[in-house]
Length: 114
Length: 110
Image (tube, rainbow over all chains, first blue to last red; front, side):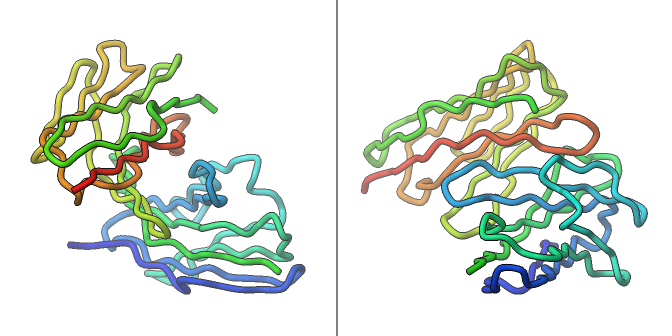
């Protein structure tokens, strides 16, 4: 069964460093998403992406964040200058164009900012 | 952001018992999703409900969407230890985003 994959599974970085989280969405899906989950809290929407453009973003997704589809398979989330409060699980998700409410999630990347 | 309240937050039952957990909102959703999440892992999609009053079954799990599309319930029949997990409901809002509840932590004791 097709699934969303994410790398790395765990990323440790120093405050102020740049990190890139990578995702390979399900191959026939055209909408891609990033969510995050701070330990013990709800899963929160960050951004959605379609046709090489941001479709929607939340108030969390400020200028420190960017997304890119650098090739035909990968979808990345970049945090330019990490802060302690960026420590969280980051989930990539993807969906079909016509069923954007039905989103399939990857296993997540645990980001730890020291 | 529309709020989804899940209750109870924590539920512990004996193997073989039935349980029901709830997901409620004051807002109308075009659809609701139920996911299951294990510690340190991503949410795994169980079901999407779209039509008010809709009932969907997944083996021993029964999902119902309220008539007004503001609430949903998950009923587990004859719970097994393998049903232990965090059950999340999520509602589609805006164009693309899902709004999640905090989850129902279910523990099934053998």
